[in-house]
Length: 225
Image (cartoon, rainbow, N blue to C red):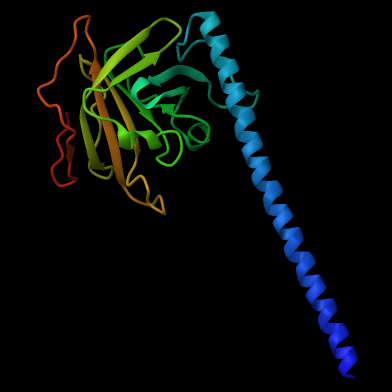
């Protein structure tokens, strides 16, 4: 009876070990599959962006949109370049969840690149726009389209509550706003706080700002710049 008990215990232990090992293999395979899909998606995004550049037109209404894959509901419209952070990212049309999963997204409610108004680009705080936490005042941002590359200079950084703050879209000025959830290192993404980087179009001459140090407004003291 005692031997039978030990044999049974060993069988149960073996089954548990096999199940744990199989579970670990499954998790590793799933992680590899996700990383593989992400890598392939980035390659497809860059390929479709090169096609867009070859066409020489990035209009949202352009019928020759180059989708990264046939079933995609978005397509590349620009490239965001931040030399200080060594960042170059394809920007997709629209800021829906399906777009932001692969790249920053251009809000279709804001201004379009190369036009007056506020261009609003959103990205996830823990992936594509994690670098925003290191942006400084007076940093240069470049927004490349098939037509040309516009240069912007950061003039304000704000933390806002999305429940009571709206970015002013319609203006005669040329502005670029980068938006991400906040705080950057939060465990959950349920916060209504947003981190905004405001930049204005850089003229032909060097644009100087009076402030030389980073300043971030608190949510209780918000100003729509």
